[in-house]
Length: 283
Image (tube, rainbow, N blue to C red):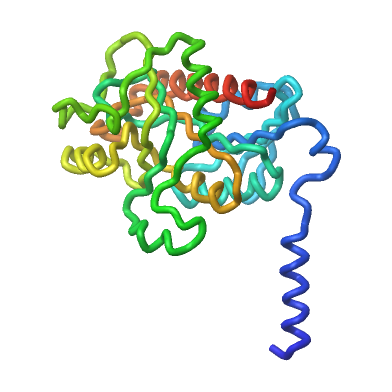
């Protein structure tokens, strides 16, 4: 390419980076909060709020919703880290959100919590990757802490709903229950503030689950959170992950087919907590 071509390419790149992420009319309407989910069942409650009809763009189903004057940019990413990262970047570029919350379900690794409980992610860990090498690039992190103010808002929301606080694995360890990942039995609702492990694999082997507890102190495992957290860290957007426990790690993926009602109920619980957090940070 000659020098004029290089200049043209440079002007094109600069124009792209100068492109406004949200128009001025939108920015005068108060806060914009992006909410990302992997599955339609996780986003169902958000789509029940007033707003425009959902659209599909780049394979992402998204819609704007109104929450008492706060704009919610809701998107269904699909499962897995690549989908999660792409959708987080889409939400940030398109809507310039004041915060991004990932809402959905997860499998428990902490023996003190179980189905219907909630994990508020204080730290996101990415599995199956050499994060020491990846951290040589922006945002230069091997794991991804969430926003302290958002964590406090989630804690206040769960306390107001009379959820009992349970110790995270990092706070109290596995208590000798190396093979226990939680319970499916009915119990008073609990929550913990701890670590969320993200994997593109559905882990079931006992030795793998024990490694997640021992090495990462992970309280639950899912398939998207760390990827969205990494994009938010790169872009300077406050991030939080809220996961409701739908199953205990170690169950076969096919076993969940017979418990669709549980998956829907726990997904809706995560969404309810997320809406409560959104209301708190909007003020």
